Image (tube, rainbow, N blue to C red):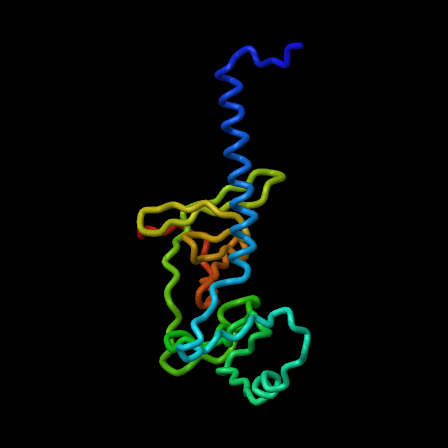
Length: 187
C-alpha cells in the first residue's frame, strides 16, 4: 500500500510544518492562561494606587454627575443658535436699503447724502419681432448687451426698458436711475 510517501523531502517538510504549528498552538494556549492571572505583586512594597475600573457599561445612575451637570448655567453670548440669519447692521456709508419699488430710491435720505452715480450711457437698442427688447449700454469703453432683469457688470440691474428710457438699479444701494434713450456724444 502506498500513502504518497515516495518523496522523502516532501514528507519531512510536512512533518516539520505540523510540528511547528503544534508548538505555536501550545504556546498560545499556555501563554494566554498565565497572562490572564497577571504577575503577583510584591507584598513587602506598599500597594500602589490602582486605576479605577472602566464602568462604561455600568447601568447604575451616578447622582453626583447629574448634580454637577444641573449646576452648569448656559451663557448665550448674544447669538441665537436657532436662526440662520445674522442681524442686519446698517453700513455707515449707505442709508438703510429700502424695499425695491418703482421709480428712484424711495424714502427720506439723510442730509448731505448723494446717491452714487450710475456711469452707464445709452449706446443703442435692438428689437426683433417676437423677441424681448435688448439694450446696448456703454461704460468706459465696454459695451454691455442686456434684457430686462439682467445684471450688468455685477452691479447694475436692468429693471425696465421702455421706448424713451431704461430704468437701471444699483443693486448695492437700491438706487434707481432712468437712462434716456437718446444719442450721447460722451463716448
